[in-house]
Image 1 (cartoon, rainbow, N blue to C red):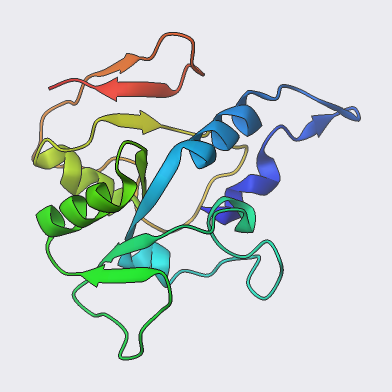
Image 2 (image 1 turned 45 degrees about the vertical axis):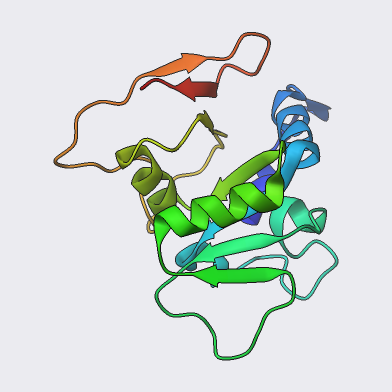
Length: 163
């Protein structure tokens, strides 16, 4: 996800168009008690790798992470718990987060959570770039629609998942 931060509130004519994306990302980060990350995202190519901006939220997040994977690394990673079962991952991340957010990073993990009815909210950032690869934002070829309800007072792309 770090690759997209360079697009947040990109200036037009020297002036930011809006601070809504930065504000939403900052509120999300401050409210996050744990990350639930897919294997692809965890092992992904962070464009900030090796810099002080490496990691979630441009390197500003320093909390715990739970990675959903069937192939955990052989060496332990500080602050990261690896699990292979979705329900266990949600449970572990929720226990770590307490009353705070469990922020999901990874389109496939989010889709799996929607499929089993455990994803509560979605925050989508739109940026001016088309990606040629990766996992689609929402891909359920055999699934039905998922209705979202905008959360009052939030950016228009922060919604509750209807059940």
